[in-house]
Image (cartoon, rainbow, N blue to C red; front, top):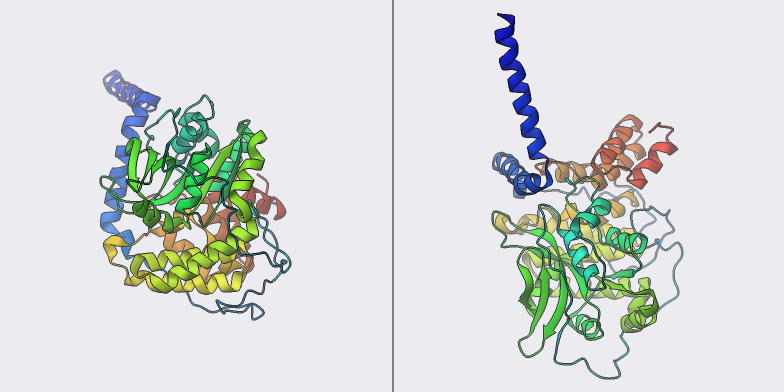
Length: 431
């Protein structure tokens, strides 16, 4: 009797082991895992529609020294947090001239198409590694999105890679250099392309099968003035994907017109000359803040949400947290007015400016509420930044136990995430 029971049990266990082994083979995992993820997400979102999750800020500032006025550009000294490559300003900066790029000796030609890319369709949830791999291939780098993903996404469940992380990869893992800026425009793209530099842009993206609005990177590799269109290496749509100037600007707005340029070290002077005043981070953020402010005056609906969000992000980068908090409050106040089927409910997956703004204005309850709303609307709560900032808020409110738990959760999502490691060590927690 015992043998009769033991044999089927052993056979069952063996079958499970074989299934797990086959499932985890790269060739099988890449083809099947995304379907499982999609199924789980569909079930979760059917029960709890994420577009219905709305964060309502309390708008109660705890730091009266910071002015809430959007027009006040007084900057208050604050400590540096290592979640951005730009060190926040600690004093009121010397005034810079309004950024205007020095005209090229000759206007860019009416059409450019850069060649020499190795196109890659992205694996599931692998947008940034695939696009960075394609951009690197132009410069002779030999590798694939698997190589970039190993650095950018140690946890393949991670939903986002920040632009600064892509710059880190280029500077630490290749012989190239990279720079990221915001407030880009069509003219800047054309000058860079005509000078031989493909450009990675971060955009909003729609129209993907079974998906609504999400963040997406594209490598812009050419343009045509006659047709008013760009050429992109798109990890979803394929090589030499064509999109109009207007469509790119519309999608680009969602991410503050962010762009990344890769270049050999010996060509740095040329890149900085092309950028002109935008080579200076403060001047660039100031210019982008002006653009966002103009957008808030002329846009409506979802685009108005993006404009206020961009305004807040630029004030964060300028160390102007009071004004940033007011701008983000305006963005979130606008959010419920957006039709549900158009709401960019994934926004906090990709951008963390509100956490900075609310932290440095003492609005810790808002930070916790925003993180709860963001993580609760996910099919799989895997945002290390949201866990980190919720932990910072809990710590500020005296909840050290809850903070440690969230710091540790952030490390489960992103092993060796430096800000959380530093905080845990400071608290005396053994890793």
